[in-house]
Length: 427
Image 1 (tube, rainbow, N blue to C red):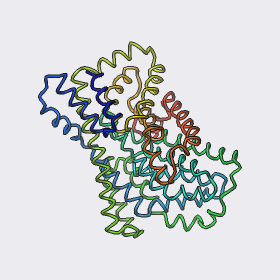
Image 2: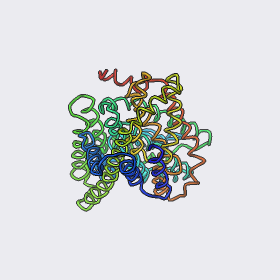
Image 3: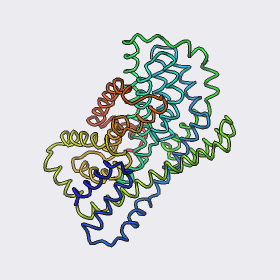
Image 4: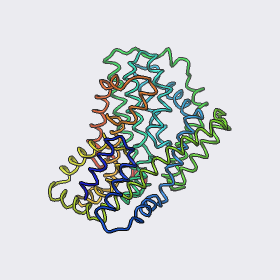
């Protein structure tokens, strides 16, 4: 049954059928063709997959990210960081990485980060004589932090699918996110010096630090309030998502006054479409997972993996290779909802912490956003930079290499993910 369902899903994806529809139809085939269950199970399980309180955070974080982009919050963050590092060699690329990290700390979405920050910094880097392919590649790669730095939509999905505490996942994401940001920063500085890129003083002299800091106070307060409230136990991640929307709305419309009512309607429309797509994927993946679980497939896969790989090291190596290939072809949210319930229990049998395994899975699948043929961040960066994908590839390869190196450290050094849990008293 497993191979039949996967075959149906792969064939439909090959015919350019949307991912959610392909997964759903594979689930229908499994229900109708290989089980004695009534067809009423199909809508029932699709609903049950969505009937989880933590999932309520997803649409709110999407709205908050779109409000930040439309309300001038992202632009002020760019100005502040550029005033700090913009006059050094490699300053603008470093600015891109830092701003993506801050923006990701609220939006939870890599695609939203690509559009919001890329629209400002890709043209700025091009004006400073950085190759447009490099600017677009760096933006797409740095925006990957949107799903690794908490709060993160994939972390919510993993927590719900694997039964891991979402709050612990948010705290654990700090280590991997900072590691990737620092590694990318070191790479772009070395790359800029090797290329003899001149300092960017001409652009940054227009942005003094103190005025930029004053203009960005409310923008900086947003991640502090959201993450501080979560880590301090003041509110749950779901409650934090609602507070993020309220704060972004007030700052964008009443403080910065860059968001009009017409713009608000546009933000709500985009956010509704994005939320509906993700929720549809979750519901169809829930049906798919139910059928597989009912047939005993996860248990069979678990036994095979344990019998095949005799150590956690080899198991994690195999999982990383499999996830990397899956991430290239399947959307991150769908991959997590389908695969996490299967692999997370196996990882626990090897003594791997489920939160640590979640960081491995999320970081690995996030690379699918910057690897062809279906890297959503790549297409978003191409649209912003108005270039074709092949112009990004020479610059993208070493950036992906940096992420792979970071993934290896995250995989085999659990402390990268778990140290922050002990630091914040969650363990």
